[in-house]
Image 1 (tube, rainbow, N blue to C red):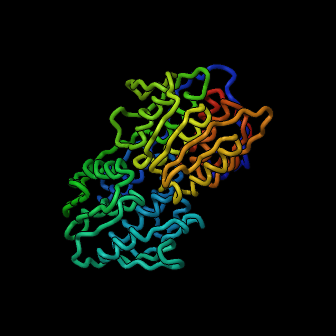
Image 2: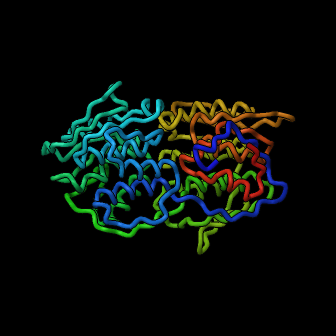
Length: 414
């Protein structure tokens, strides 16, 4: 099930028969990989990149950056769509960008509007504000200052920042309102610095002067988003110790916050020379988490807390509604199959209620074409055997996920 060609309609998961003792070589970060690919392309591909992610999103980015085709199909890769939109415009190419039906329902107007102010020629081919789009290069207008909302998607901001050094007058980017997913913006800026460009962020303004990217040797870190599922497994297992290889204590990735969140949920982290070792610890009865800076962790934490009978209050999850699926709706639907709920108790404030025991239940988790739904719910197999529909969705970010579960002792039957 590591490729799209090996498609199974479902997998049946059962808990290991013995305590979990596993060493997992996590996949590389697709967030870092995709940024590194764009920045290196903007440098004229003069750098050397190591440990690029095997995730489908990264393979798609690499393939499309090398493609001579007029139409570039990003499939369902939101990061690839946003980053390529800015890259194609800044490099003066004439391309059509499209994707899956769901990708063409995900808004892109804020980025297109900003690029148009900078002189990009971009037309919508179907519905205004959404892909597919036709990009016809750029004719700089002399404008070097644009404003963009900070609370919709940090990927718009990162896309603009990465092309900023190539603009004749650089770019001054004003972020309006609350700035969400701040660590992802900081990741982008730090990777730009690794390639010789020095952005400056003061208050809600980021300034990037005209500069040239330099040839750089860059190694991508393992994926903290992928690590989160193993934290959940250690939290739910009666006895578990897992070492995750390739993670850094001082990471560029915002999802490294999982160490702090999961400490409250019953998982201790100890960094080693090669990664981080997870062991069980005490858990709190109630946890409150603002996911504004780490929205990709919300599904994992919500499912884990419901399963452990920990009262979870979630804020900062508004962006989940425009991801691969409406993740808030998807969580509500699938948690209900286990007797749990995710309820909006005040505007943009949600709470979970616990999973209910039920003998002989045969829960089937629908994945909504969303890799994180499959992996967030997989740890529930530690409570009872479950079925995950369309398990191949994990190729988007963690192609070896099911094989790694088997290595840890889970029974995975397709």
